[in-house]
Each structure stands twice: as structure tokens, then as C-alpha cells.
Image (cartoon, rainbow, N blue to C red):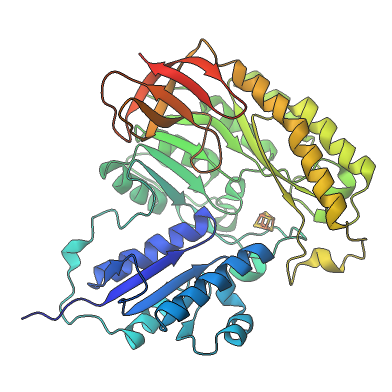
Length: 444
Ligand code: SF4
């Protein structure tokens, strides 16, 4: 009789990049015959992939570790917070092992110590594309690790090191497998997507019969041949991004498309603050650049995130940020109140911290300011026929997204349909109304 496979309860916290790490670890676990279980109780081991970016994320990670310890007692911690093991050990001295981000081998070694694998691994349990935590019809495609920038509020380069790009052909092989497995939308992620390939000096990386190089434009071109939607995240407004804009929104010969969507974390608009943040491309003429992109691709949607209440941010700086929002008319916007993350250079710049009350007020003003801008932009869609990818099928109304909405962070399109729809279907929808964040329409 075969012994039962060891069971692992896996908790994945943090950003899409951490999710990709989780997928890789889970793929290895499944490859070695481990089973996954949804409850800590009864599992042979709990693994928590943590996020340590903000203090609030650290608190969430510590809570998750605490829960694993209380309900199971055998816990391995990995991910960003694993780069600072003292804090975890202090709170939970009995932790089985702690490893840092992308330390896949160390995680697996720790797993082998605590819950040894079965002798005969069920390799065939692993689908060819690996195990994915996202729904089957979209997948995150991580093109590089680390970051060469040194934004003063961010500790990611300390945690993850400098930029290391994956050669284009390697990324394409993964993308192709995902598409073969049914993925309809690829979400390209990294810390700085526009810097892709800099570390490899844009080395040649042929794929198929094309002599591509490892660089942003070539990657966009190569991905558009796969016949699926391709969405670009974490792009900075560098001049060379201009070259990719003409590809956007054009349906390629394969039927695929580089979506007219750019996720650009601007973080602020006032030169003083951007300088103190040491943002990449802060010297670029961002506003003119956006205008130019919209001339080339009028349908382009830009999503961005901003930090309010950065140390030293004056009322004038903040108002400059609001004026930027008015002028730039960004489709989707998110904001965070600045948090002094331990180890971040921004804490030692000597600028005065902004009180939590002022931060909250600025945050509320920011959101109030942007809401009518987003709402007005969404109204443009009323009466249009647009393509929608279905995320959750419902009996009469299904929930999906347009080409201008990324999963998790942007709005939704609610689609009424007489014929049954399935997750992953891409349907034409006539938009009938819009509210502040979402669209509503009928499948045609
Ligand atoms: S670009 Fe800046 S914020 Fe983004 S990971 Fe690099 S250092 Fe951090």
C-alpha cells in the first residue's frame, strides 16, 4: 500500500510578483508528490509566502504566521519578509524555517526536512504549464527579478537585488506553454518592465524564426504573435516606451493584441517630491509624453498609483499633484498614504514627516478629486461595443473586464447574456451604463 502524500497548507500574500513565486513553489511541491490542503489543521506543514513591502503588509504576514503556528505548529516562512528573519523569530521562536524571496531551493530543502517527500513522486500530477493560482484564463508572466532603481521609499532592491532579466526566448517558452494550457490573457510583470534586458545589454534571443533581442519592444512584438491579450504592468515613461505604443490596440495577424493599457506607477507629480523619492524618469516630461502616446493610440488607458503624504510634501506639492490628475485624465488611479518602511532611505532624508491626520485628509481629497475624472472617462464607453473577457460566469449576469481593466486592481464590466458564458470567453458587449468604477452592458 502506498503511504499517503504529505499535505501542505499554503498561504500566499502580497503582490503579483509574490504570487508568481508561490506558483513556482507549489509547482515544485506538486512535482514531488506533495498534496495541497485548504486547512492548516491536519496538514503536515504550513508555508506562508509573506510580503514585507509596507508595515501593514508585514503585520498581515505576521498574523498569517501566527495563525499557522496556532492551528498547526509547523510553519515555514518565505518571501519578502523572510529577508528580515529576526522580527519573525522574535514573535514566533518555534518557526521551522525562514527563507528569503525567490529562494525556491531553500524552501524545498526546508520542506524536505520537516515533511519528507514520498519516495515515488507523482510527476504526472503537474500540468505542463505548472500550477497557477490565478484563474485558468489569465496568467502573470514575470520577465525579470530585482530592480536597478533606488526609489527612497522602497526596500525591494535591498530585498531582491539588482535587475536580472530572463532572456526573451525563455519568457516566450513559458508564455507559449501558458497559452497552450488555455490562458487568454498574459499580464507582464516585473519591478520595472521598461528596463527589461538592460542588464543583458539587450542580448539577441531568437525565438521561432525571428532574431529577437531581449528588450521591451521585441518582447511586445513576440508576445503579440501568440494570439492572446497581452497587458503591460510597471512601465516607466522612458522615451523608448514610445516605440511600443503603435503596437497597442492593433489586432495582430495571430488575433492577439498588445492591449492599449499601461500601468505606470507615477507615485507623484511635484518635482520636489519626485526628486526626494528618487524616482526613475522623474526628469522626463511626463505629461508631454502621455499626450504623445494618446495621439498615437487614442484608446490608450493609463492606470497609476500615487503616494500621498511623503515626508516633506508641502500643500503646494500636493496641489500640483491634483493639477496633474486634472490635466493627465488618467483612467484608473490608486493611492497610498506614505508609510516609513523600516530600512527605506526616505526615513533618513531629514524631511519632516507628515502627520497621519494630514495624510488622511490629502488621501481623501485625492480620491474625491479623481473620482469625477474616472467617472467621466467611463461614460465615454456608454453606447460603444467593446470586447470583454469573462472572469466569473453567472446565470444571467457575468462579471468580466474590458481591454482597459486589469484583474484585481481595476474595474469590472457586468454582462447580461441570454446564452451561457464561461470564464475565459471573450465576448462583444454593448455598454448601456457606467457608474463610478464599473460598466454594465449586454452581450451581442
Ligand atoms: S522602481 Fe522604485 S519602487 Fe519600483 S521596485 Fe524599483 S526601487 Fe522599488
